[in-house]
Length: 219
Ligand SMILES: [Zn+2]
Ligand SMILES: [Zn+2]
Image 1 (cartoon, rainbow, N blue to C red):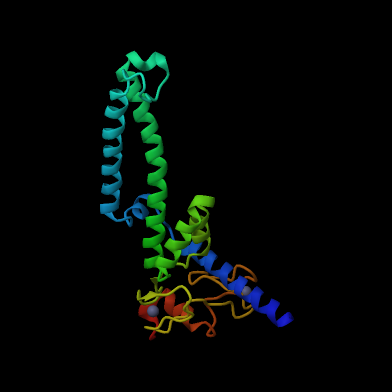
Image 2 (cartoon, rainbow, N blue to C red; image 1 turned 90 degrees about the horizontal axis):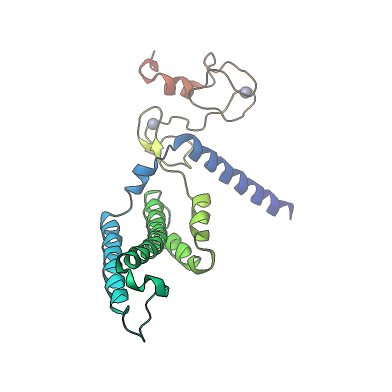
């Protein structure tokens, strides 16, 4: 039982560590992120919107003098086809925007999961299955659970996975810890932020110095 709870808490700690890493290393901008949504999908959504407007307005106007037709607006708007068309265009636009946000979010989950080396089809299905009941519940779950992106090694620039402890190319320590208090520190720290141990002066952190100044590592 205690073995089980230990396992749960260590996997929880690992998850928290990855979330912190994501915050530290990833500086995502909306414009750049939007660009990973396939261009054809954005065009398709735009075309569907124009088609929806092109069908809704003429159909609605055609019904306006038909006593049995279902003209969408109150009787007063019946003699104002331009006003009625604008009102309908507004309604169609709001619905389309709502649908477009859901479609783009789902496409983003799919592309983003793929580039992070996660199971893209699985996460797309999760997002779609939770869509009818929770709207973006599946998407939010994905944003909480997603793996950090691979990032360049601070020493050699080789792309390294978020779960790596050492760079496979240059053996750089990717999660250096303070030699005195053993807590995790950043490659660029000069002093340990927890116990003020001077990090540059010690031989027990050779990878740290290498990370900071690769050219002088051989001296
Ligand atoms: Zn490296
Ligand atoms: Zn320390």
